[in-house]
Image (cartoon, rainbow, N blue to C red):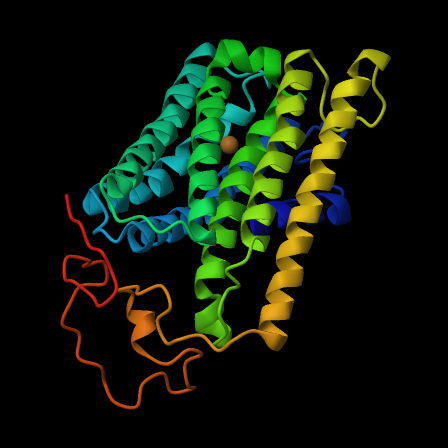
Length: 330
Ligand SMILES: [Cu+2]
């Protein structure tokens, strides 16, 4: 879709045809349709792998089989499918009919329903699990918070009457970042800590660095984007760098939050770089995970396995007792 759109723009500009340009008899709303038909599902390119990563990580750090595994898997397919029929929610004020707006609004809310199914099952996986509070678990909690907050503001934005007020304001920017940066980056951080020993054969440091960085990132993120929800609701449009005096305080708060966020990432970079250079060697499976990737050495040799491994358990089967692990299954 993106390729076709770029091609049509090129044909219009080089050939002088009027396809999108209203001055030449084209339709600019057609450009919006083509752009959002691609750009809405594009969000899921980033957040669906994050959801998959969290499903695995929740299971590993609760030492329990994922609760409602099939529901988690099917709701991913549901999001991927319905995501192709929601693009019109970006165009509620582009002269859409009431019927179209209502249909796009309801279809968009289905994404919220599928996400809620996942959240319920992730929390169900944690329930009565033997939770280990290592750094990745902090990011799992952050992820759950951001996806719930971001998801609920998404359902609100899919409501046409509310969207007319919030359209093209900072409210949309804040909602988008809660999902894209909040949820996706939390999943990325959870899994980069989790796979760090797998990738480099070095332990993730157990010091305070992980907790301090996670707190700075989660607090900083809220301080950055909650003021933007407020600014949007007060009517500050997006993509403007000048604004009336009374928006100043909230914009400064947002910048301060972004600074905290930056320091959080800096701390992670520093302690991971130190661990890489001077850290202790990690054991083969430091998290006692049942994932198949942990059956080989860390880091894995080029050929992965010396011989074909015999798989005796499913990758999330935490029912069996392992030395040193307290396993409780609901
Ligand atoms: Cu969208």
